[in-house]
Length: 355
Image 1 (cartoon, helix red, strand yellow):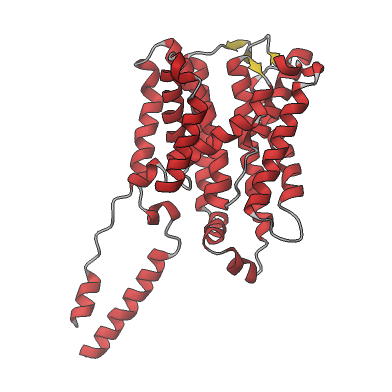
Image 2 (tube, rainbow, N blue to C red; image 1 turned 135 degrees about the vertical axis):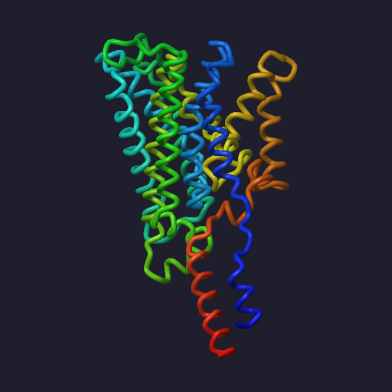
């Protein structure tokens, strides 16, 4: 047997995968946090969990599909307004109905946006989609801000709690664990999507859209599907957030929240699903700490803008980039199979040469 064959038989040392470790750590924290913090902080963390779903929806668009969207707040806020209206006008407050309704609203609105921005004859430029979603979000915010039927600039309050049967879900530990369970389901569904055959196409889109288009893939359709799935998640997030806060206003679908969703993803690290969650925790924690400092609070939007510029310029992979390699972040579709095939061919060649 040749030296080359012997070296092939010694398996190379695999690099440690960081993402599964982070998943386990975050899951343990998710389960145990209410046991170590006050009821007030539990409410704050619940808010972060719900915003985490919004951040995941952005990551699916930009991190996995190359769609720079500033419209996630549009799906978030539109869903919030619909569930608030039905709660106040029709008493529609059961959890089993509110969750599908929020997802449906997000799906419908995102499909309409995708129809105009993504499903044209030619593939749209990134800036076109970004400006289109930004314009839609701004227009919706201005519309509800002047519409008295939905409270205009004062927004709408929900007068009833979310219900499971006859049990009222007040903001607290029970609401926390329900939101946490929904976040886990959303994360697992998104994780399955990006690691499926559909995700293989998304990986190819990230590498070279023209090559996939040459082989007959309709890039716009794949992008529209991801965009609608992300809109559905954002709608779910908006419905839960409205009930948790007991209020929805024009800011829930405005440019500010859409920009926050972008910042969550960029700061934590897009293309990982976990990075945006870490971004939410980091940014919302800093915002909570600085909320009592009046001299800093007025400059907080400027500080966020500076943070975004620094991250984009010097660390585009975000916080997760310090721990997760580029190879693990992108994925290794087909690598193991190719290595096995190459190894077997080399071993056969070595045997033939030594026979």
